[in-house]
Length: 58
Image 1 (cartoon, rainbow, N blue to C red):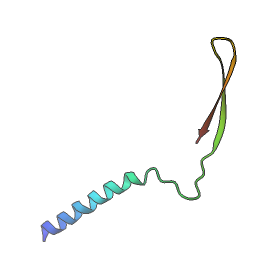
Image 2: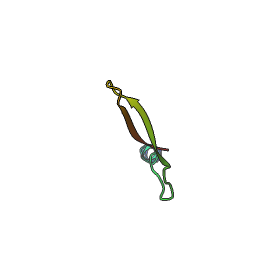
Image 3: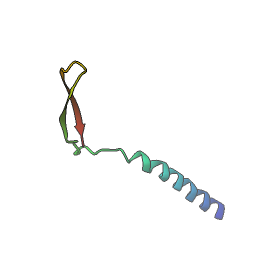
Image 4: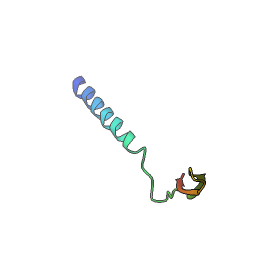
């Protein structure tokens, strides 16, 4: 009886330990990230203006 209970507890603990990290990156349906475009101005070797547009989401 003791072995059955112990093996059940170990199996449940193993199942829950694998399920917890998989839920870490989950977003619900109501979650919408806030994104905006960031512009970075740089100049190349010839003095020409180069504008990079980077999308930043939080």
